[in-house]
Length: 446
Image 1 (cartoon, one colour):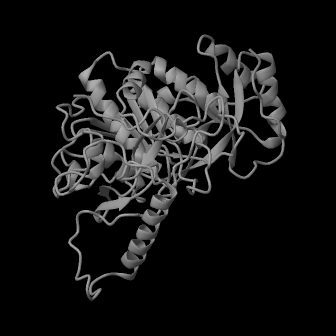
Image 2 (image 1 turned 180 degrees about the vertical axis):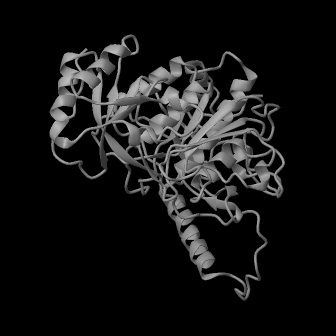
Image 3 (image 1 turned 90 degrees about the horizontal axis):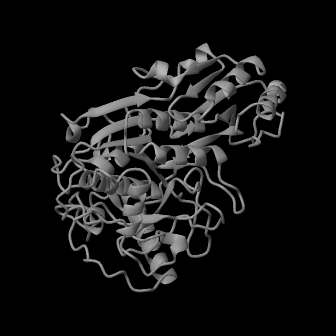
């Protein structure tokens, strides 16, 4: 098999870091590594040597890091020496070389529905209402009206959420409140901006935490990661209702692959996946990525990582992206959710309509939406204020990850591709285009 190689020798383009991803063959990793060392002159470290600590320091000591569980290397080479890296691919078993991308936590759309928890001030006078809240509420009402005008089909036939006093609308919609499964003993890795390790709702929980961001600890200085972990694995009985977490007894693996500013790189994501696979996590949740254009192919390397993870018994679920502005503008599923072997998650609103920002399956041969979940007005954990309500396919993704943990608990054979199949087979079909919602609304096992 001939490797796909990087074609440019210029400085990194916008959206790239200047490093490269190298896909090594599973059955002959030594040949590829030998070529990297002898032809390109690269000194590489191994992730297996950093299992008990952060692997990001490997780049300070070497030219690259080999992610042993995935058989992928992340290497740094000067632009003028790129021809050496390409020559490795031409004369060895290296399968593909790609520029490393910059990735982000998908930006959250404005909240369309007020939080269900706080008691509201006197509406007749406006006393006590902050300007920020009033603007958010106004924008939310406008967004709801826009969605109703743009999509007037009836809501799907599921029990209507009348109150969020006990559990969020999202948990009710995916039937997490009626299942007997809790994710007990199932390892769920959430790769994001880290986690608020001091949050009272997670006191006493089994948490494995690792930072893959140079110079930053796992402690979440952004909020996005804590919110996603809360939805996937929040407690069955939080300090303050409503309940917001799907798999309340799951074992949390919090991987910080995005900085406190919400940005990171492909290499950090791959290092987090490598860590999760090596730890035996059946589920990896990633509410992150980069926007792509119509016609942009998916990453060959991330696709192979998705396949290798499935064979190892790990399902990767990722956010489809928030770039659409429905009904007038549709944007394709972003990277890396656009890989066929990574489950792409779309967002729904409380009426089970497609969220106005949710990306669509527009690119052929990959780039499809696989499943949908609640992603509008999602209430969950947050650093500092303890709780927050935000929107995004980022919020839909951990709903799927949590349900995957429930299915994995209910069936020890539901791992990898079998877990993927269970999720799509049990999804509630919606009166929506498959381009937008895939198999439908994710559902908990009975």
